[in-house]
Amino acid sequence: MKTNKTILTLTRTALCAALVFVLTSFLKLPTATGYVHLGDSAVCLAAAILPLPYSAIAAGLGAGLADLAGGYVSWMPITFIIKALMTLAFTNKSAKILSVRNIIALVCAILINAAGYWLGGSILAGNLVAPLSEVPSNLMQGFIGGIFFCVFALAIDSDKSVADIVKGRK
Image (tube, rainbow, N blue to C red; front, side, top):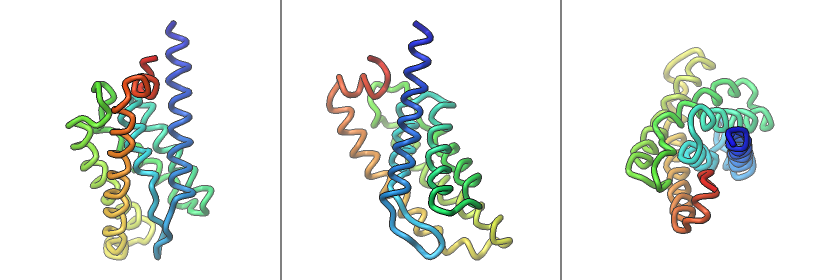
């Protein structure tokens, strides 16, 4: 029985990583130094349905591979760390995906994303000022991703049988 649960968790982790990759790679709007995408909604969804460390691995791997595929190789390790950190405040233990804790975690994740990319950009640029120009677009990306996370969560939470499958209870 434990083996089946482990296989199910690994399968859900791989599916979440793929969802993060697809929403990051294919639904994006280019900016001056990168792009804005919907992948953060999948990062938050993975964090709300998978236990740690699986959610962190799915988020980091999916987003990091999107950077690799998109030609942003220097950002890949930075992205992996940021997206993994975004998952830490979420819980998968709530009966609903869209719980009070996960809404608070969403705000934390948006701030972690913006601060993380500012810090990562500072490391790559060699100064703290240049990356400040990307903070507004990173906050906007997080906000838009947060809206889509809420929509996805409400849709999943509205049907108990779907929620049970997504959260691995069936």
